[in-house]
Length: 154
Image (cartoon, rainbow, N blue to C red; front, side):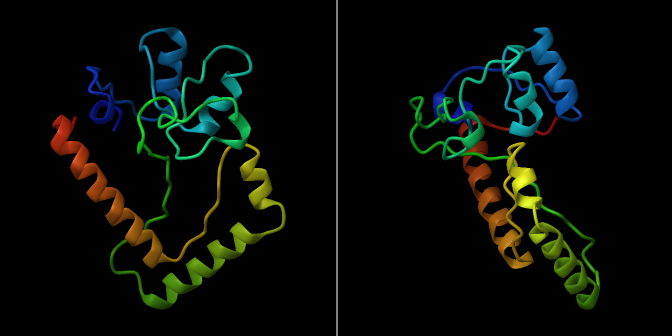
């Protein structure tokens, strides 16, 4: 998304998870990276990493001094790290409903949201239909990015 918005030339370096990406960033093997807040948050106060901008549409309460990419000169930019729980295609409806209810109860458990917020995670707990709609919207947004920068599968 940044390549499409800023028209800069950067090489995408794929990693098998955030830990090796953060190690290479701290070690100077790569110049910059987009990593989720819970991954980088412990490294910022120590000075091992410097937060330049947040990809979210609003500033993080935990890093309120860090501007968003949109505030940094790229209006309309917004990309957040989003996790969604998935299941195999043919799970019976009753099992799905029990799982969704259990997940919702876990998210609503006293103190859960507060503990998650303390490390930069916002727990949404949406219904499967909402997750499907958001996934479809993100897929369409990435198709637009793909057309601009010519994404390829690594």
